[in-house]
Image 1 (spheres, helix red, strand yellow):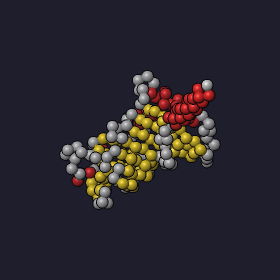
Image 2 (image 1 turned 135 degrees about the vertical axis):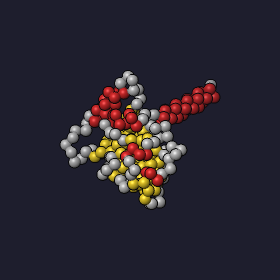
Image 3 (image 1 turned 180 degrees about the vertical axis):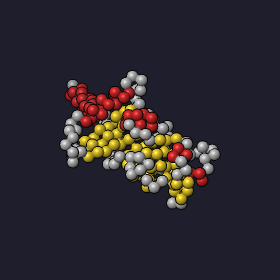
Image 4 (image 1 turned 90 degrees about the vertical axis):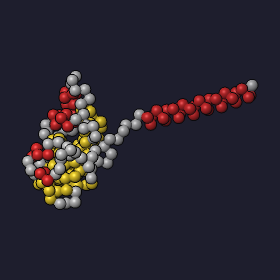
Length: 201
């Protein structure tokens, strides 16, 4: 009888331990992914498949704008845009607010969706002459015009935007204009002071 009761106690302890582990694992499994990380400036990433991830950052501390319902407003705008025919074209991944500093992570299925949703006219295509025979620099800082670029194999794409943000691309930047500062072969900063252009492959 003593042995039986002792075994019951051992079994109870084992079950309790297993349940505690399960609860801990389940709780950890529900932890939300941090898409924003430590990014504190507007950042756009263009993926290999053409989809876009945007981290939009804005500090409202110097304004009287009421941000209490901002997250719901963003969700509402996304729902309105996607409707029934553009399912998952735009997705809110994460919303962070701290001391009136708002950071939002949003996924877009394509640049067209990004432009339509945000009212922008960014361009990403293979027509290098879309802006004429513009002057650029190569990655060594040498001057070059579009006409001097051999695009016979359609190896390059041109991307342009007139807002200020950090751009990350799945590819390699080879040329850029004066409104761009390069952070590496696949990252650049657009100054927002004019039409920034990069050519990449």
